[in-house]
Length: 229
Ligand code: C5P
Image 1: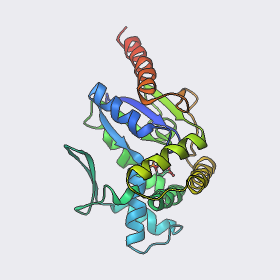
Image 2: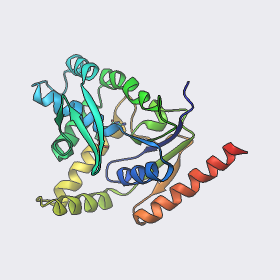
Image 3: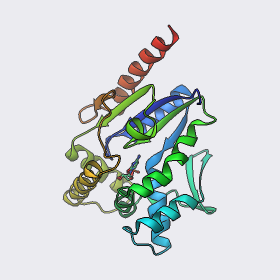
Image 4: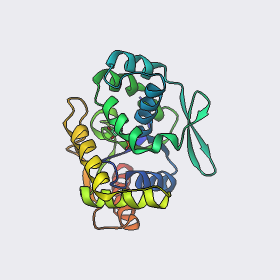
């Protein structure tokens, strides 16, 4: 059993988990696990291999042999699949929607479980970003945060992000996609998106990033202080 201190951050896409977990990892000097990226890479690899996104056995095999690594560079973490840098290729709406389809398959989730837990092996601390970090992957996490925001606010943020990246974005289409992805993530039979009973909930709809980070740090520091006593 490792002594890794774990901060599990779960919640729907667009609530601000990516930014929050990045800042927390920097603040505490902890490693970062972006579990969504793993599902995205699998979906990307599956499409490339011509697999159907409902072919559970083939996807399980693909998940077991996925040659994926995360490489830290000056401009952030790069996602490498078979020596190909696919950092931006996996950030499309299509890959996100595909990821939520493959992530609904129980054998796929089981095949990727240990890979996620291994992030704790060498780390003194880990900030884990996902949907089931506090409920399934790291139920022993000392800190569990469930970060939420309304669908409308998440859609507005996504539209802004897409526009800033020079892409076309229609609010109603993005909102619809967010609702569909939420529906799939919340209602799947294994590891559905749900707050762990012992998680604190933060709603980021009406607060900015600085306020969100401050709330989280205050809470984490209180847990760290208790552990020291
Ligand atoms: O967080 P991100 O949007 O990158 O995740 C892509 C998809 O991967 C999510 O919509 C969700 O279906 C799936 N996912 C998951 N469990 C996780 C992380 C992501 O099912 N721990």
